[in-house]
Length: 324
Length: 137
Image (tube, rainbow over all chains, first blue to last red):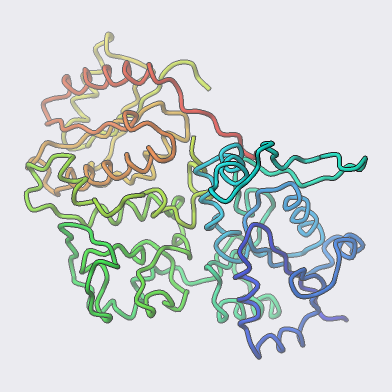
């Protein structure tokens, strides 16, 4: 029997997830030994027609990174879904919508106007916008349709598992590959990472006070902090209290508070609003009973962009999905 | 989308909710347009539920808590901070701040709450339903 076939694909993403596969370093050789990589546009010269020629379900496992927002992306993920036994949403964008999902604060019209008309470096006197078809020298040229809304992968196709992270760390990727090879997979729909919050595994948790109470929130670049102490103790927002662990605390170890790329723990529907709730709960105004809404807003002052902060990685997968 | 307003009012089980149930026995205050939902304390109200209400067609959501110093758990302060921040976030997502109201009501003030909820519904009726967002577009 031949080796199991594995495919990688990318949609609306930055390329960091592809880099994460390369970051497996020598381990990638173990992967290549155990499986046949049959499709990987960033690295190997297989074509869409090669995938189309395969039997349905022939690919054992497909990793898809990036959010979905064009007709072409939908066509490709639907094709890969048909040809694959298992599909893993790889990385924050496929899992939750990710950074590209912040485009859901806008719509197609607003994005096109900004990108093709009003940016200072744009010179477009004829007001030309991308369109699905256009005529050039008697030939018809086509572009994939651009959607109003960015979607995480599971809003477009059925997804078997999720590998969280921006980008997923090497150990979780290897664990996922090994789980598939050994057939020891958890139930369908599982996120292949621990279901604890980052606070539980944070190297700074020893210094986290029993009860955190913050009088006024502060911004990290304006706050002098001991690099071993909990960010929240200083009033600096860290989303580790509401975010899944498993990232290897890469940001924390680089002295940056968590911004939530691993998404929520099991059972939470809306990571953004859960994070918002957790942070608001930690505030304690000096004269709470007489506080006015203005006092609360002043204490929350450094949160200039609450929706952007709390939904940084998860707006398309949130309960509201996008702005109205 | 329904053409009649629907507002959800979250009320504390230990203060205003029992009285509100009695108030609603008065036929003049009975309304399909105002739905009280009991919580164990305004501080136990997960803001996810506020968003669920909007997602499921509510035109407005009212969160009620006990007045300052009347909540045994300081849950009212927690709820106020959460709703203040949530209102700002909702505004960024195109949901007008007026659609999320917060007010203080004591155990004996269910009639006052019933009146406030009715006025809230009337204000929200002017705004109409939330804009619909297609599943896939």
